[in-house]
Picture 1: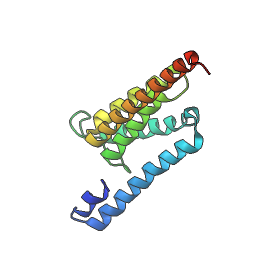
Picture 2 (picture 1 turned 180 degrees about the vertical axis):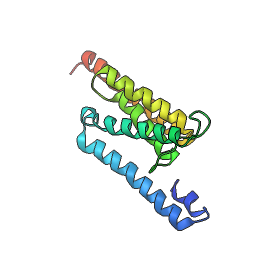
Picture 3 (picture 1 turned 90 degrees about the vertical axis):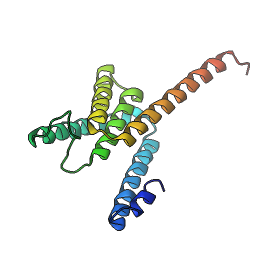
Length: 153
């Protein structure tokens, strides 16, 4: 509903509503893939695709003559909001994924850079909320493990 209501109030409501539906299905699909795979190490190859998207966005922005710091990133197929969401996903893989630390650091740093260069507020908020929830979940798991060691059966 948070995407459909603004879409219906836009100048071209049918087109905007269909695009909002596509974004919602994309997010639901990503959540479904995460549930299906159940382990973050299976999601790490997604990082290669994200890095390719980021490199394409930076290259297209620079080739088009736009200043990297003065304008939003441009991409042939993605909007700046979609690039920001990809940056948030990369940040989450860097923070909570499994694998080598250098790989996770690269994904996290690239995600933060794309979030900032995309200059989109909603993906930045999504990244912060997702990171906060992830930290809380990890802290609660640790607390549960410690409590389980000392709790009588």
